[in-house]
Amino acid sequence: MSDCIIEMSGLTKRYKSKTAVLNADLKIFKGEIVGLIGKNGAGKSTLLKMIGGLIYPTSGELHFFNRSSGENQSFFERMGVLIENAGLYPHYSAYENLNLLAMAYGLKDRNKQIEKLLQLVGLDHKNTAKVKSYSMGMKQRLGIAIALLGSPDVLILDEPINGLDPEGIVEIRQLILELNKDGLTIIISSHFLEELSKIATKYAIIHQGEIVEVISREELLQKCEERIEIGVDEAKTAIPVLERELQISKYKVAYGQTLYVYDRNIEIRQITKVLVDHGVSVDSIYKHKQSLEQYFLERTESAGDHYD
Ligand SMILES: Nc1ncnc2c1ncn2[C@@H]1O[C@H](COP(=O)(O)OP(=O)(O)OP(=O)(O)O)[C@@H](O)[C@H]1O
Image (cartoon, rainbow, N blue to C red):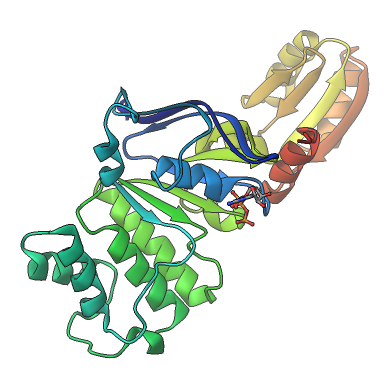
């Protein structure tokens, strides 16, 4: 996963006096599923629209495949975009919707490509029912099929599970994972953090237009793992005691005076006892388990507010 296919630096979008996105720096690598997380109005859609070429940045750089987007607008053709709603024709079938667009794009082998796409998103190409009779989930899957016309390298999905019932959510999740298995890079925005955590390989947390953190799935899971936090004078004096007496092996030192112990089956009272018995005074000790939701809330609340 070493090919950086999108790189933005200092990407900014202002609407008159409103700054929707400010100085966004982010690298996206081939095969990633990047979850863009932020509250309503954080700037997610604006950022996705800039990546998808639907709006121009006010300033900053956007590079695709190590080349500036300004050098070659055709890079945007390699993005499949589903932002807001798919703009479906309600009185046509799924096939007809795709066919109209495929003709407009001048795609060759339309029939074959459309059948393949409909199959991929779990819709029947022979179904002549009008799209207006479709469920939200079916419309969303058709929207994804439309975004996939022309075999893009990157699929951009803005809140694709908004308004879907639990079954629809599972279908979209499975579809995204399936598409990613075939190598497609996906950028997906959401404020359903738990849902996003089931698919994203990397997260960019956006708050009031600014990317406040980029974190991998592994890092995030580690941060949200259950741990015992021990406050001591010096962590390095506590570690050998805990290793020897309780055989702890999964731990981390934070700020020199705090020790995080991730080993299961070790109780707070055991730790307190051995440390005190060996002359290490314990200033604080407690179990800590952070939910994803808490983590993101903390990141967005501690990030501070910026005003235009
Ligand atoms: N065309 C526009 N003109 C003026 N302001 C805009 C425009 N588009 C977006 N904004 C403002 O920019 C900010 C970011 O909007 P954006 O739609 O990118 O946020 P979002 O994170 O996608 O939120 P939501 O989930 O509510 O769509 C908001 O304050 C919004 O009101």
